[in-house]
Length: 141
Image (cartoon, rainbow, N blue to C red; front, side):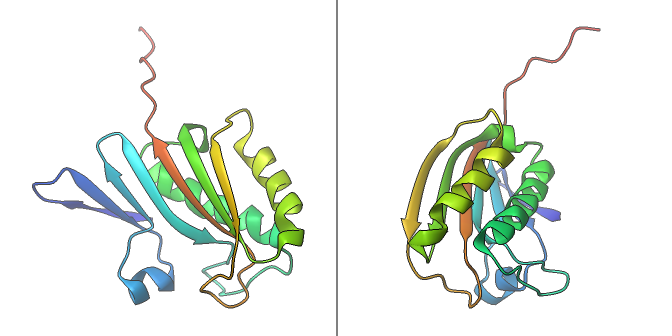
């Protein structure tokens, strides 16, 4: 991940190296103040270009990419307030939901799941999240 500050706006743009970011001219995430908007993220291994066979396996990869973007923004999956899940096959919703429940742990963000076609061939799940950097108080020394 790499990030670039936009002078005068306080915004920071985070790039993951996905070929789709370059193709469509977007950022993996945008940080604006405490808020972090993470773009729709598919479960593709961007290094190899490969897609795992199942929606559940792809759903294991997408949060890894999202975690990287959040880390660059000094946040974690525990800071996610909303997740949007896009799944082409309604039959995959339960498997994808189970992976998300496990990956998000005790965090229980707002969630919307939509069954619809995806723009990328072979993609079986796409995740989009909104997070806010936590306001944890620093530990006293």
